[in-house]
Length: 296
Image (cartoon, rainbow, N blue to C red; front, side, top):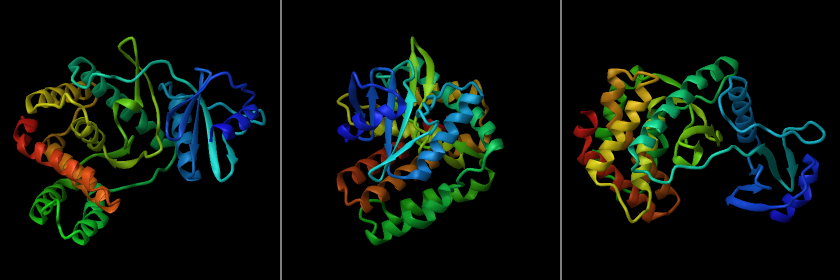
């Protein structure tokens, strides 16, 4: 793949001096650009649309670099390649830093405000966490004969979500919020990246996804319940300094968190990945054990 990238870079007028892989589908070029590979053209074009609109509203998102012919991306050997300017900054490395956790909360709220403007410009894929839970997630767990998640646990979590779902604010969300997709420079937010999974959904999904994701990190320094609750408090405090959550949203946060972990159990079960399915269930139990503290 790197040989392919070296061959097509001249289409952007870029000469390769340094090329390093960031993750499976993205490479840094000359410390100044990032080239990303897609196999899904629709996903690529959605990412371009969101990045462009955010830039128009002066939200720090990676600026698309056009080819010499003025094209936004290039197709090659069944893949599509997009080049963007490399944003200044780096990822947060200490997940237990309460100051940076609060800044992540602020960053999510700022992005949600900007996403409202995006929705005024274009229609986006409308998804429903509740329908996912009642659809493919349930079917997968049934096919697996409820070996990891007990049916009673599933019914309680999804039932609680269903009771309030119609009252939860919905909007365009990032859908893949983690430290790797939010960049900070000298302690301040410097940019957002990777809008491939963005969709309309309940807005607290982003908050819950981020916070449960911290528990899923495989590190030697795992969170205690007390440490994690402090991070939850810091993230929500940061978010609410910009956007207020409704009382219903606050009460349903533990339920949404548990549903996300059940979703991951189903996803990894479908992938025949028993280890990560069990890891997701362990996070589910962790949240269940401290849900009253989350609400407080």
